[in-house]
Amino acid sequence: MYDLTGFQRDLLYVIAGRDEPHGLAIKEELEEYYEKEIHHGRLYPNLDTLVDKGLVEKGQRDRRTNFYSLTRRGRREIDARREWEEQYVDL
Image 1 (cartoon, rainbow, N blue to C red):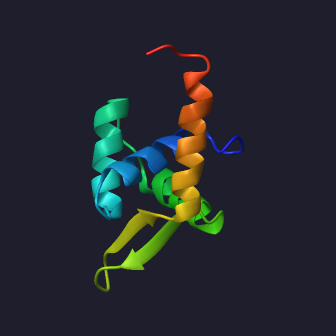
Image 2: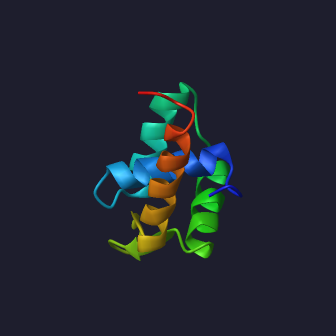
């Protein structure tokens, strides 16, 4: 996960926390968090990067709507990141 941008990591966390969200649901969640508009030109290329890296699977709900889910590798990467963070952040 070290080679991901912060935005890409946030995408992974949103996808992990929702049940097969579609792009618009991911976009809305991030807009709420960032408190600003997320443009499609930023969102979808970053989602495609996560798919290309094997961290996320992209499925088709209908002809216009895709959904996203974590792969096993994506889940392992999140787990490894959380373990790494726990070394530095005492909760």
